[in-house]
Image (cartoon, rainbow, N blue to C red; front, side, top):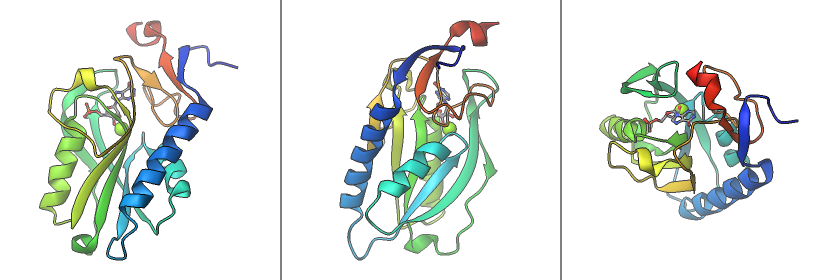
Length: 183
Ligand code: IMP
Ligand code: MG
């Protein structure tokens, strides 16, 4: 049954599965070289479900790591500054091909900041993969290397994405009823 706070399902479980399968195929192709050392970097907490599904579908060897950053406050608007709450600590970073895995790109600040940060820290290569993209909301010019699907400017939840830490476990991506956050 549909969660009572969901206005409508934007992307169903079956559609998500297809999108993730396509992304995994592209990534597997691009990182198939003997010289590659793919490290998927999960941006906690929103990307946790997406990354779990994505890594299972890859056909190349993969390592995983996590960072936690926050750009959003408690509501539906980005706070504008990026805080690193959990950093990546890897002495072998110069041998790693990092693929940042994000749930959604909105203003572009998080991915743009993290890409620069990891390059500066010395990663051999840094690329980005996002499940969702809201291109109309960009304030920083940024195009991810892998994009699952573009969506309109609506606040979405589920499949890892939250509003005030809720709804992350929904298996689909839904549009949150505006009355939930305008109350
Ligand atoms: P950016 O730095 O503005 O691109 O923000 C990206 C982050 O904002 C994502 O990792 C999400 O945590 C959060 N975010 C942006 N849009 C939404 C949304 O519609 N639902 C839930 N979280 C969102
Ligand atoms: Mg996030």
